[in-house]
Length: 150
Image 1 (cartoon, rainbow, N blue to C red):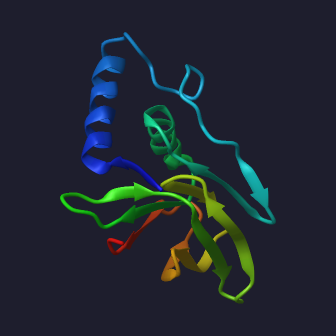
Image 2 (cartoon, helix red, strand yellow):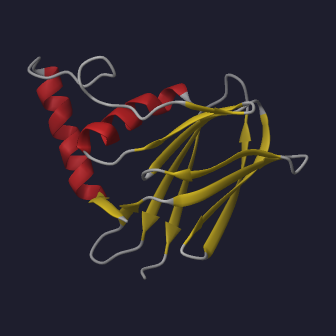
């Protein structure tokens, strides 16, 4: 599923920021932009989405409240495109699965306990994995997964 090109989204976000700064339209969780539903799975709290401009902006603004941000892209010419329906599995250092879901959009935000994690993202039979360390009070971590053009 192709969502929206990155430059188009970046331009739209910049425009929304200018409009908000002028007071004509504020983009917050309370004023019309929509965040997907927050889900709990064991100790993990997460949400995924970002389809459509309003939801993409809301997800990017909400990211600062989560310890882990994931972004999913398909390599495309002339520019990469956001993608969805990515199977995401997160395991802790003891190899226990703490999150197992299918991303409903190009972004997945997760709040997980401190620790070392292996994140596996799979789409169209191709799996990619990255390791990440989350620390309380530490910086938010961002993982970007990119798949080759189909």
